[in-house]
Amino acid sequence: MRVVLAHGWGFGPDLWDAVASFLVGYDICRLDNGYFGGRRIGSPKEAHILVGHSAGVMEALLTPASGRRGLLSINGFPRFTQAATYEYGTPMRVLTRMQAAFVRDPDAVLRDFRARCGVTGDWSGAPDARRLGDGLAELATGDGRAGLEACPVVALAGRQDTIVPPTLTDAAFARHHVDWISDGGHMLPLTHPQACAESIRAFHARACATI
Image 1: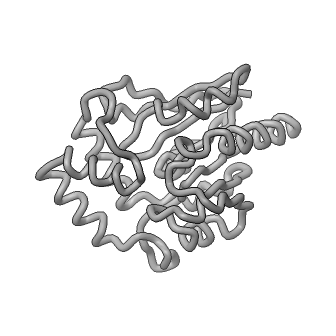
Image 2: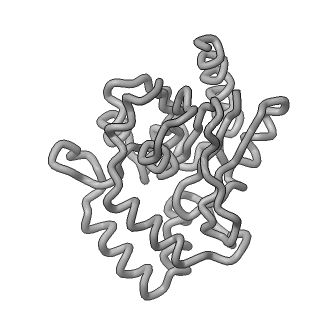
């Protein structure tokens, strides 16, 4: 069964380089939102499990689940902003300010966001402001909670994540199993790639066992 890797806002498929190095022999496909000039690659329709990081989870839940046998969330969420029944989300005003600043200076907003995630230095490829802007709009208003019932879901999260804090993870995945990394922040695929790979292998094995 194919393992499909989906990155979140402000990153690209190279996010998964270290994780993939621990998954030799697995059939892996990396999606690409084209934020840095890459060709946009969508989810395959054949049987697969989807592993999403951050906003990649919400985006997966907003798309048809054809062929999807399971979803593993890493630092992810079905909805990012607050709603009437989702009080632990990020206040909408935070995203509104971010969107306004992005219109004025996309590079500065992107750099600041990545720094808050714990990632410094330049990115590879030229940022595509249009696609990044569209992704930011979806981050502000997207709600994939209904999609959580379409297939088995497991979450991997960091107790030190300041972008998706534990309160948001607990609220978002209240009906699903969550594995915690006590010293993990928001970038588990970069800081804890082996732990991510172990979660993927375990989830993949369970999904294959149900075929």
